[in-house]
Amino acid sequence: SILKDKRRLTLVFHHPNIEHWKHVQRAIISSGFKPEITKEPIRLLSNSKTSSQHKTKKITRGFLVFNLIKDSNYKPKQLQTMDRKKYVTLVKSLKVEAKRLGYLRKSDVYDFIINRLVFKVELQEIEL
Image (cartoon, rainbow, N blue to C red):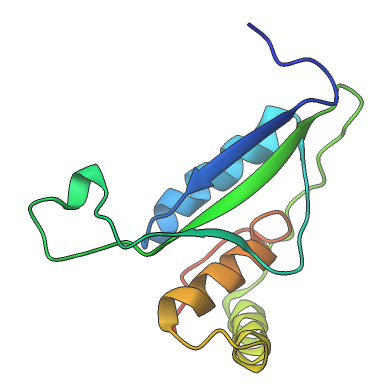
């Protein structure tokens, strides 16, 4: 069935590779769903392994949650493209803000930065 106008879709995702985030970013932007923008990330935290982690020592703790609203009148905004220097400066300022707000672990800071950029700026590598 097709999702009706004003109905919500919730996307839960995590991956440490920015290339995967770029694909998710493009899919969301081209979907026609209006993102519900949040200042701080909505996260699901878990100590359980994902299905792909059963043979490794890794445990993904945080998954980002994005709420998207079906809106046939919504026109997605163009993502801002930045040169590397400007992008790095932006990421550094978001890193400082994340730490000021209490995001101390690298994975938490990463989630904070992704949440802030995913609907605004074409993603590039994020060095923490």
